[in-house]
Length: 277
Length: 288
Image (cartoon, rainbow over all chains, first blue to last red; front, side):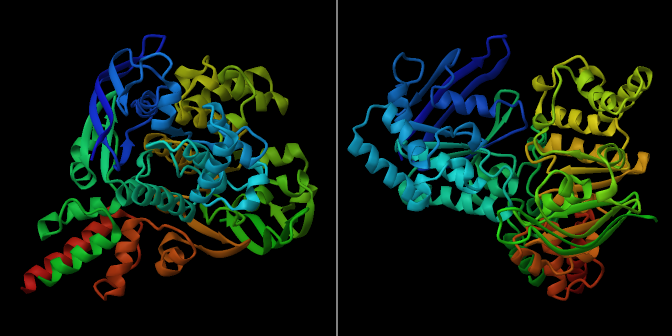
């Protein structure tokens, strides 16, 4: 897998001098599904915004698809590399028609009318937005669909990496699973690298393959999801609790149940084997 | 305990919709209870609590059948001031509730509106700031606070009115785990120390299940279940089918029950579930 993002000794300070990120080093490979976790104020959203050039590092560098985000006049190239979906779709949507909303970014990067139409059709289809909805006002759609419209408007630029900030906030369990299954499909079938920012550890356990834990502007843990959740004491420093099924498994570890269980089904399977051994 | 909320055969349909948002709902809520309300989006949860607050039928247009009684009085006969005295309402998005440029002014706003004197207002501000941990933030702008702090301001401004019932509609949906814990802790204190009745709508069931005296499941405009947590979680399979995500410890306990390994009562406590599982494992080991 090729590197799509390279971050080297990256610091970021806001204008008032607050240093939100303090020396981040990592690489992200094409096709990864990553969860960025940590308490509010840990630097998650700031970090995500440095990945698509919305914020420029004050020290070190971020390269996306080989492009240094600190360079001037690279934003049009960067939007094709990394797309950022806001936590609240209502903060992102502003057109009075779904079709115009999806067409907005391709138009802004100067694509032809023909190409724009093709991108809108493609992005709507991938996001599961029916033809009938394209002429509707986005604000008359339910939140789950508004979220899909905001993702479609990012997809229209065909970015390699899609960052989704709190994809499940305010959604019920079924809607949360539906939106996450959609992101999984984008990852597995269309090869997009997905980065989600979330506080929902059950969602992280179910969908992410890699977890990056931020704490006070630094990376506290970075690794395979099972490996990260098997370290509850380290996670506690970032005020992150492991999923409940993992917690139960860890309490039953002395009976032969592994510490890195991620789901209720896995817990039950391991419990049954442990008592029948 | 006294029944303070009685809903009798309530049906409500918003204008321009083709089916009722609530249909033939009847339930009773006793004083000083913590009531958790859950259910899928669009199932009628917010409509239900809006009926208890009197926002429906006073502020919405639609068809209303049946009745809601608050402290024995029909809600249709209560004016805004009486309703404010009985029930406070906290929204999911605290900013939707803010009107002032400092936390102190925000807390005073509602009290000024019901005509309290300035000494009383000052006293109550100190009182709610202490309960909600806002003492050091009184001169800050509510818009400059963290999500959890903003929600605490929203709760404090409602609490300052000293209503008998506080309704919170998804108050933690935008908060991180620390923010969520702080809101649940404040609600637990309001119930235990101030003897208030708390009605909280939430999607995530883990914290709600552990604090609620009773849980209401709203599904397609009807009350699908209304019971103490131990009974509410008796049929986990049905809850999953209805689109809920019960806490993993409850799913696990249900699996133990289904497999005939445990026949005691359901518990919402993770620690108790762990103890039950450990004793099953220890028993099996001893037999071997």
